[in-house]
Image (cartoon, rainbow, N blue to C red):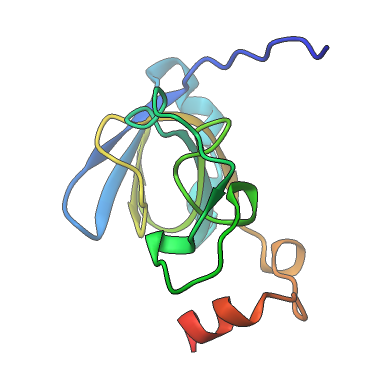
Length: 140
């Protein structure tokens, strides 16, 4: 059996409006952000605290759409997951000390931040990534 993994949040989300939010990093980690302002985008990894106590289904219809196939929850972006970890690439608008103002974060106000990592297009983009047909129909 695997050992239990425990994370300590490094900050929390403060939602400004539907598009913008602040990623407020704990004061004692402010120095760890030095240089982040050189990136246009960052990954924000957070804990989805509002769904943490919900029952996790093994299969779901993506986006709750019954017209889409029933697939394993780990092959979707459903917030109901075995571990309620969220990951979003966001635009970094500015940094002020320990606060990152971002656009595009889909976390809720008060969500605990687990990590922030820079987005590097040459390393993080997969040019010929494959997706199922039903996802193509949703996107295009």
